[in-house]
Length: 268
Image (tube, rainbow, N blue to C red; front, top):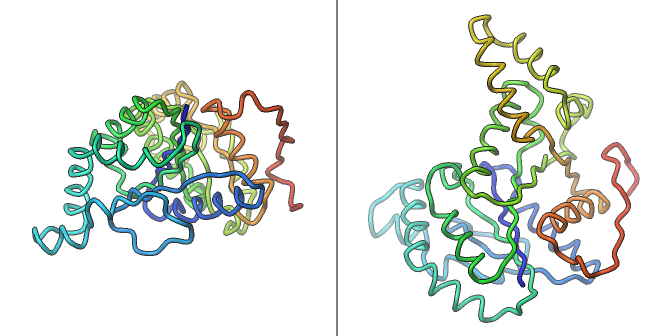
């Protein structure tokens, strides 16, 4: 049985930085993970790349040869990956053991997680290779200081959850850049009535019924719970990793206990 994280989220949400910090944390605690680059446009890495989509296809080559722009070129690359997925994954995964832990650093184009089937098919291939997979959705914490942005972020995450049909962990990244954490605390695990009240105050009266329907949708799918991640704190990284491990049943046979993490705890 293998284990995998699919690290997704909007462009600029900190996916590659998360992967790098996770690798460093696991190296410190002497735990082996392998980071896989699924972004054909990536150029620089702060972590060792175990598998790289650019060995199969590169965005620069596609743009030059086909005259496509960045977005069209990336979609072409991902479709090419989908067409060659079985051969590529089989060849690459032969280098790893059955119990290896892979972290896939994905592109930031939101359509890949909402309505384009490439990543969904990718996940199905991983499952057929006997991998337990979790979607790790990163959202920039600075995006959460406004109720309308919060609801938008929730709906984007919900769209990815419905499309991929995976255990799903929502993470608020870049907490170290938030100057006033009280602005964030209200949105970490809010009550639906609080969300509706805030949304109604920001929207015109004619949107009241729509606001109610949106908040009910978010609440029904348990999408109002986010885990804050401060990469300066080892305990924060450890807590996030423990939640992800639990969702994919990693280390169930190991007698490991992880102390609860308090997001307000400033100690290292």
